Length: 123
Image (tube, rainbow, N blue to C red; front, side, top):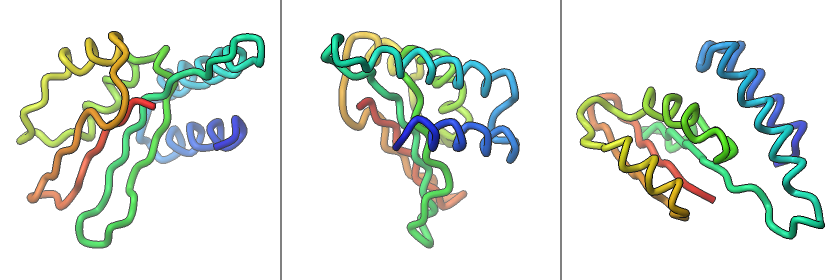
């Protein structure tokens, strides 16, 4: 996804009320920082925290958000909104796994009551 598309996704999330304007500003700032980190001299692209919420009935994505890991604390608060209350997820442990360099899918929870699946990835 291009930087422009990421910005538009954040602005759409603000408009739809999924995140606050303050959270959106932090994410936009982090995108700017992350794009600077992806210079050829660095040789390493920034890591991303990705939250995907899928409707179990239709299989369609309801939420698909990519956030630079540099903003893991904001990302954790955002991701926590989508984790079902019935799920036994230790967000502190998740934050520590992210900081220690975990990669791949770190959470996969299905909530039968709301018919949603929440997946969190570190890429």
